[in-house]
Image (cartoon, rainbow over all chains, first blue to last red; front, side):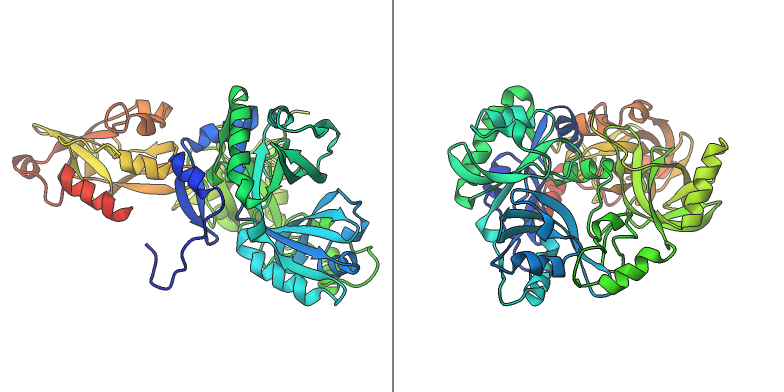
Length: 379
Length: 131
């Protein structure tokens, strides 16, 4: 049900395709997106064993261009995009002056003076505003979200499937690299990135060509077991891969250090950047919380917001939880006190179980603390 | 979505098939489709009493957990043991192999249809309004 003030959901260049495929559609960050086409567990498993095709056109594309673009991004973000070679990409974050995370991002350096910043759909306006505020007069910031469709092809068969549609040397494209390529006859930006824990590609395409490219990929992948995959599978895939999601593991009240991602903060880069003082202090302080992995011992699923218990007393909160199609058991990420994490590891070493649990609607369900990620793709 | 004519329905998307004093209960095709892959079902134990309109179990799917509401008053006579091993039966065959439990109706309930249950036509209207 939508209230009278609710804006209509935005359609992507591929929404018509999802409707024709009979997808269950859902509102997500203001967009009408495919949640799943059939069984989300089957979609998940297809990405792990063959390949999946995702519409990610809701993601925000923001360009930063001009002679001052690299310096502007070094100042605006916690990473150092000026150190990226053209054609390379990096996972990074944009923080508030107090060190709180505004969003996590992938920054692609397309050329010396041209960067593409990919933001989460819900945060795109805030990221655009922050970049525009932080850039000098010699850098132009533009929200180009409507100018791109974004299609992700993910899974062990992705390279094989894409190879039939392009003459580009895919084996030569490293992980976190991007370059212009012709796919199915259309000039696109091709990147070897993803959010599933598998090898794969992301294709930034002209919106008017998206349906045709989607169809070409679908046909090319049929014999390899390629299936369309929705947001439900995307969420369980990223969770198994231990990748954080903004709004769950990341947010304005958390710093990159809280999420165990302090490595993205380049305190040794030259010059000031937004959040530097707060993050430098945070880097030296004793951690207040630790992001951990939990595997449930029962079949009941820990969900976002549930309490984590140590000896029946609350010691943290679940940030994301789902049944893991790969493990066949419930998994979760949670923020817990460093003390609880230490105690759980110690008791595990001692072969003692059952003191760590998740409060699942009033019942303490035992869980084991495990290292992240839950899943790592075979080398 | 399939809505078999011979069944009765609740507003919470359970179906109930009444034969004599026994009521078989499950969740509807519409419900399983909305939930997505069912990974775990918690059922009332055999012999326990259930009350119409009260939660008596849970269905967990990838994205959510939902209560199962008892459609009738009575005592649980049997639960579907297959569901424990293979919760996906609820998705694959919600009106058949995916049944959840059977209730022996209380004496008062057996005489007439429990109040508040919907016919197939009424349930179809309900889910059409939810779309």
